[in-house]
Image (cartoon, rainbow, N blue to C red; front, top):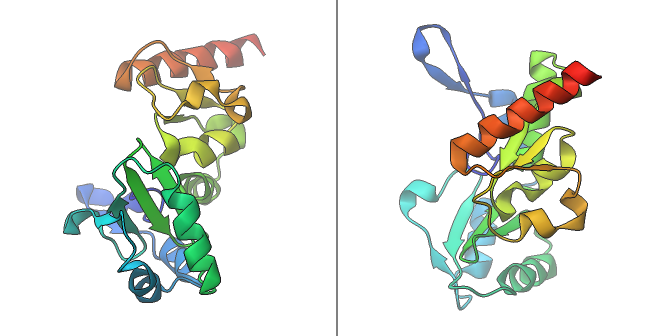
Length: 183
């Protein structure tokens, strides 16, 4: 959750617990306060609601500025601050620890559960899913995608569903199940 910056596991009784191993991994080299201070006066960035601000994520609205991520990356690099910057939907900008992303989070959970890579199916709809879609062999782009996902050459091996939202995910799962039966 939170663009891959947090992982929760369901415990007996339906209680969810944070993955503290993941928390420690993504915290390495992350200086949230320094990053927030460096970009505090940067124009064109409006912090998202407090609910979207997490221990390992800073989230902003960028008012449709396609160069915001590049500009913020250069600014943070000039201060020696390492992080991951993700733009999506033409209006969101998330700043995460360098180790955090949806793709690295999926890989962490896959390893923790002892699953083969072929047993994992991921689905995405926007720019904040690119790295995850790129890294998983069974990847679905749902029909209501944005940010030009289906046109990206680096995502050409993904299954592009016609269905939107959950219907697109179910369509993609059916596709990969059929493919596995034929193999």
